[in-house]
Image (tube, rainbow, N blue to C red; front, side, top):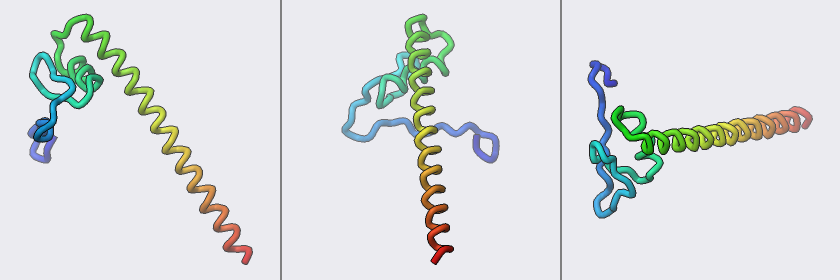
Length: 95
């Protein structure tokens, strides 16, 4: 939502000269990946079919796994950064 309470709709047009890999069968919105289309259909269109609902569940699970992996990488990176800074502080104070 915007500051004045209006709903902001992002630009969804694909770049000029490119073909979308998937298009929503209900609102014709283009998507770069089928998984993104499946997530959109499951979240935005209540009248989706059972197959589309199953594809949504699979896509949601895959998205959840990817997000968990991303969080692990961020936590590992922050831990490594902390360890490096800690070791540099020890070396710096012993000189």
